[in-house]
Image (tube, rainbow, N blue to C red):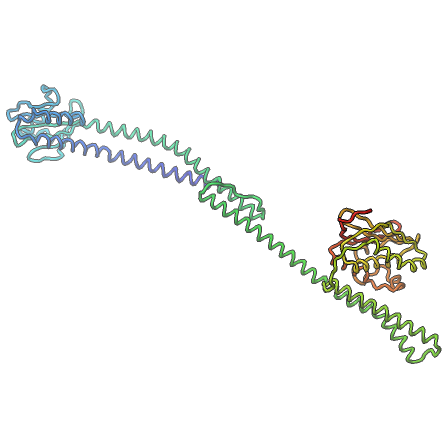
Length: 499
């Protein structure tokens, strides 16, 4: 397509140039000879006017007249002869003995018109004072334009100019124009090809850019520096490319956000269904137990005091579990929806961890569990101390509930530049790989029978995840061959230095 445009430009320009040259040649060939004839006729009329201005025959000898006649003779290659009434030569631009001018003069004087009607003479114009005609000299086969006449002062004149030079000039002019045409066409072809190349090269670049834009590739740009229309078009295409890229980027961003919103809505719907199902399932057992034991008390199934106390303890224990689960759900709901305020403060994470370990030491001793902690010196962090206490307590509770084999719990606090990592490892069975990403989901339980055994609700790790997200920190779990390790990160206080 580009080559076609380039060839069309070259062809049209070449054709116009060629037509112009042919038109000039045709005009020159048709009208140049007529123009020459007209100039020759005007020259003869000028000679007649100059001769007719003589008042007497003596005026022929004046310097002004002589100069005029010489000028006509030299400029127009003209032969002029003037004779008085007695046929004596007063002025001759050629040799006075040359008889070639006498024949037309005598013919005009004596009225011999035989030469006018023959094949050698063609009358152009005739008045009472002169006769203008084209004459062919049979001896030399040469054409002339001649004027013969008589003046009011009685003088006769004849003026002749050769027409052969006209034809020669026309032929030379046509040949020269042909040479010029060939030269001009060669030069024009080179110029046209160069100009069309300059025009189509930026067009080719623009078409390549538009093709890349159609393929959503906006890295290609038009490079130009002049103020030509094509460069201005290129700049506009660059601007359009930038706008399209920006618009497509915005559309993709909006599309991704829309997809995320749709996925989030689907996830929320699924979570709502799961939540209702899980809450119903978790509340069904304690409610059934409470209802059963309450009905037993009402119907006095056992009248002794010990049985009644047992029934009451079961009812109270199940009610306590339900209340704890509801409180955890409320806490999780407040954290996830941002209703729970966050208080950032600087505190010693080592002291907090050791306090919680000390509070759980009695339960650990009952299960013969050994708890170790590597942190002995103060390590200060920035966070919400109350929420971090809840996170670490959840980790420790899980560790105590799942510790097996060596019955060992290792607590580690590692400080690396601006980040502090707290981890809780317990020996026991690793979490199955298919469940490791699901343990953060509320009500999800890897071992439901065991969770029910120690009274777990499956909400603790969901609260941990929600708290760490609200603090813009990370948490996770790692499986080891001999156990499981849970961890979370905090922002360290870089101004603190160890003693």
